[in-house]
Image (cartoon, rainbow, N blue to C red; front, top):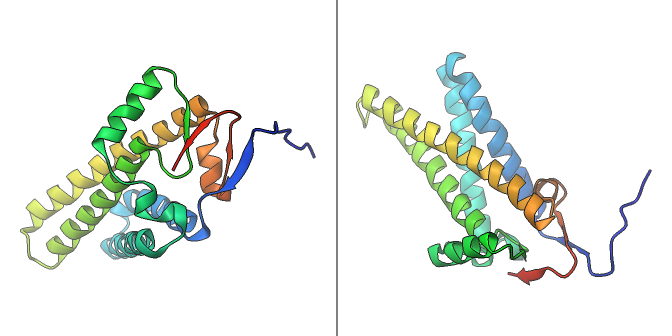
Length: 187
């Protein structure tokens, strides 16, 4: 077994608590499962959708009362901060964020919003509040937009990991981020 050698300036920080990680990966699996279940039956598709909505609700509540880096105050949505972050990236400036960086924060809020809207469209259609054809089209459109956003999210996490030299995917599995030496740190 090899041990990673870290310089004195590197440090490992506990960032993502188990609830955040379980919700994140459960929603990811269930969302992909829902695409696979489209042809398998309405009941399983709906059950998976309700599970996603429940998990997103738990995560949103945890954003208010949860651990330090899980709370919304650790990663407020800000277009100005996102623009500044993009300028920093283009200038080659590496800034490590303990929680989400400004672009990641916007993506998290966008994905939660999309998942809630997808569920609302599906439930409204099933309950007969919206005409079936219209509701299904809206539900499918939102799901496709979410899929594109998820692909951008994955690309962003991988790209940011390479640029910042911080394994964001690994951090979402273990809960720990190893911050690079001499990185400017925020939040």
